[in-house]
Length: 390
Image (tube, rainbow, N blue to C red):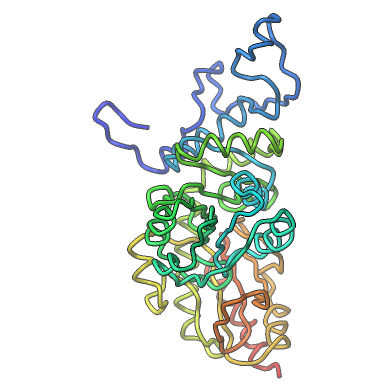
């Protein structure tokens, strides 16, 4: 969204207005929710040529177009697809861009369901899978093979929050003819515009911050101009499209994502800094903290941080982690994040190939929209219980 002077409007203005022109539908502020499968053609010639914008429900509706147009505006992408979950947003582009005999490099710190998909279905389909250290940077060039077609990144890392040098990885991948995909759910395009850093295909679990209310499963995948035709073809071929009511809920959540994300960021940083001084805490894994080893790289590339990070307890094992979790009252014990409520989960790193030693059990915290003072009190009770546990 720009005026004649070429100035790009602020992100919250774009979030509030992108994807739908109310005057294109009788002035109503929100786009219509179109429940569609069959689409009728005016005559046989039009049907034979498919010479109209909408042809069947799986190939797009005014509702999905509204969401995808809004995401394209945020990403600067050539096209976006809306799919039923964050995991589908990972698997569809991988199936679309990989064939038997191809090789993929995946960050070792990747979201576990992505690893499971790669280690089961991709390998069964004849794709060679290797994992790389998230700190490899330009050194990834030494890991790329003649048959490497995709490098799949995720920055920050799931659960342990290492920051990757995405421009260096992209440069090395492109020099070898591979494309770069990135799961950018943590930062969203508000804080990291992936395509500007050399990424070709950017992936989001829209379940998280775009939807924002812990009640929708959704994903989006966006691509640059070179990769968009192949992504779109994979989407059409697999027929894995999001339902209109979920799409509408994501689009509605998108309108407030900017203000919600700012609140998540402020609260999470406040709590992370406070945690660094608490007894029983070995370290806090939040790239926005000055103490984080990748903080300078984070400052170079990211425009902000979101509301999820991890804390490493001082020694102990599962009993200590469970004592911490069971003492919490405000924090729910549940997977996912990006919603209005705070959550806590134990972190399991048993699937990692690159082993980093930690002082004790790791707890991942999703900081919601509650009052910080209340969340600190809840965490303090958890730490007290953990420190008392054997």
